[in-house]
Length: 361
Image (cartoon, rainbow, N blue to C red; front, side, top):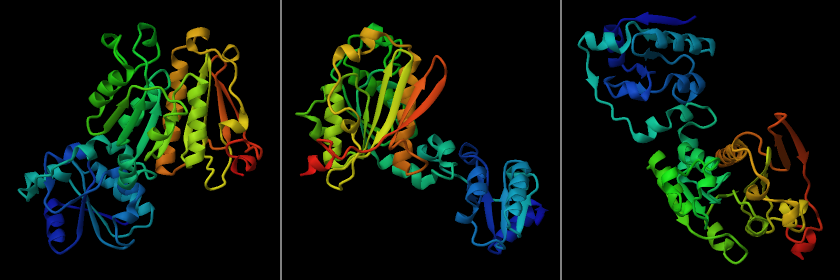
């Protein structure tokens, strides 16, 4: 293992000759003071993405943490990855300060602290987090599915959420619609949701509209958004979402619940690009209400829309970050009573009236 433990004084001398000093502590630790000239990089990020911060495998690098243990372990991990010129500061920043060596003030931003654990992930990083900050997502419905979905999209830092819902908060909603609170009963759901989400993350923009999505108004809401999430409980709105998204080439995430079960998928049809598979490929016409009762009529276990809403949020983040394997072309079904899942492979219908060949002629 090519790791040398050195004193703070030795590290300071080496730094003065141009050697790189990296502080591998956490952002909340940097604010208490950082060795002057040190580059702040979280331990997990450096270990996962060393090539972004180190010029070469034999480039000298000095690691420092709070007391020396983390820098030792980081150096050992980098050595295993093939880096050969590594130094760890004995006693860490505590010993550095005790030795009277220069310390700089570090201003940690809300962005760094709030998303620190997420940006550690190699598939996210600062670049991915910035993608989320720049994203615009339309969430149709602020009820059972929209509540958990909106919560986690806001927490994850999706920068602009557009929420459309014309309903008011009812006491019977609170068993599952967790974005609303008891004192919000009687208030418009979009106003209640905006208040809760802004309390959770005041750095994002939450745009609200007290309206019900239908064929006549969907186009104005999908204008300039990257993704649409279906949190509706009626077929009229769902078909309006699917048809308009296909016509404009905007992906949307489907979710539905029934008692103890739920479904989720991602649709990416695009009439302009000749790319099929929309909701009508599976269900050409809306079902009768008697065949698909909503939660008010059939009942629902409170956690069911919670689980499906979280899966929708997961698919949304994956799509916006362009990571993982999406549910495009797959319908995921979850049964909470048996805690089992199964997938149905879906294929575009060439005769679909919206995205099929007949729909484009």
